[in-house]
Image (cartoon, rainbow, N blue to C red):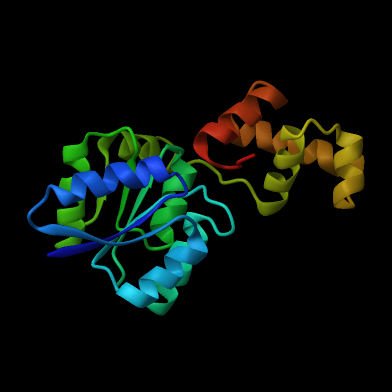
Length: 204
């Protein structure tokens, strides 16, 4: 039997997964968690074969939970199951040790196939996400400081306010904004924020 831990802060999602797994002769739902902290605790208690992990959760998000679990249990097999399709988010999850990355709107059959594949030691990323990653593989990544500036732009802050908040000169902020627009191939600040949210560079 493949023993599964389901981690999601939405009870409806967990119920759907529970119903799906209960109909499989080779799987059982061993435990559930509604945030990252609970996920780590449940993993320690139950040592599931495969964990389904949401990304956006209260108290501790999926990437942090993934890293914490993999830090203690390097062989943990974790599938990210989320509604976020951004290539940066996918790359971050895979770097943290996720074995697969699936979107919640995919077919149920794909979820079951992926659980079995990951249990067998394989890695999986859906073809649409693979295309997204490949498209941006050679892009210059934003620096941590540029990401900070972009987050404040997303909150509607002007250059002067951003400079004051980050302890920078206004000229330096302008230079960061120029780099951000170039790296994201954005027409203006609003466009840059839209692209960054879609790709998972920042979240609000």
